[in-house]
Image (cartoon, rainbow, N blue to C red; front, side):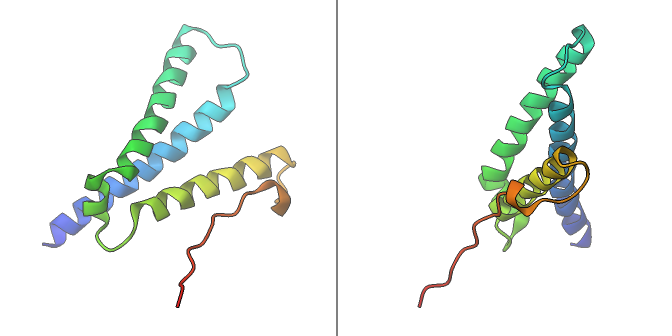
Length: 109
């Protein structure tokens, strides 16, 4: 049973790593001239971002995550990417105004 848990965690972890790598690459090459190889990799990374989005919204991700909401994980890594982008824009310093904070669910009585 432990092997299945490790596999489940590895699948989710790989999706997070893929999202982070694709986000960095797309952000880096978005406004720069590209040669043929860079253009092909750029398009691949854009598709990877879409695939990760589809994955986290799927029933398969809900099954793998168990009690944890996969959209919560996805929103967290997207917010983390915004912090990294804001940090790079503001010369390495963190600026709270440049980062959109994720909306937290409220418990209603």
